[in-house]
Image (tube, rainbow, N blue to C red; front, side):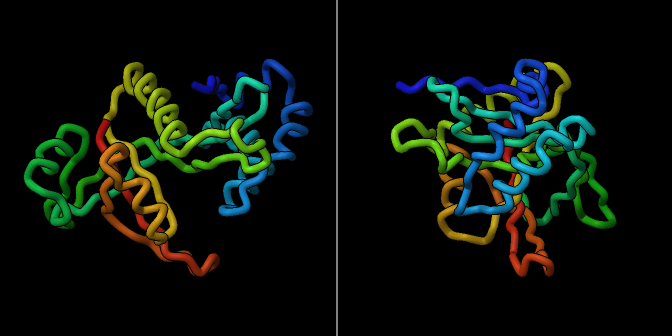
Length: 194
């Protein structure tokens, strides 16, 4: 089994310095999602320093950044009508229902970026499932320290992505969608309990 270490961007800056980290990030490649690639190269360090989000680097046994995920905290609304009775009961532990609007407002953890580095040689990379497991390891530590219990993300309206996030192991459930006019892209918002 391959070994991976998960390193917070701020800890990486402390260990090797911002200049060297920027050099390492310049090799990050995610051709299937250029938005992730651009974020890692151009924004991950700045967003962490400004406390907007924190990116975690998944480093393989060869010291290469095999993948990244970025976490933030954000308020989100989840429509009451879209939930089963059991999910309403569960979400009410973390959220407030606006009975007039018919929405729960919840402070949730956001998986803002989630992707592999395709510049890492075949066989030295990481699977999506392994990356999700590492993401939830960090989320569970944060949950232990500050509480909470809901995580959400957005993904493009693509069958393969939706299948991955909604599969039995990952268990994310759609709750809303948005359309980006600038990107001409439809995004599906999904949430999960943990």
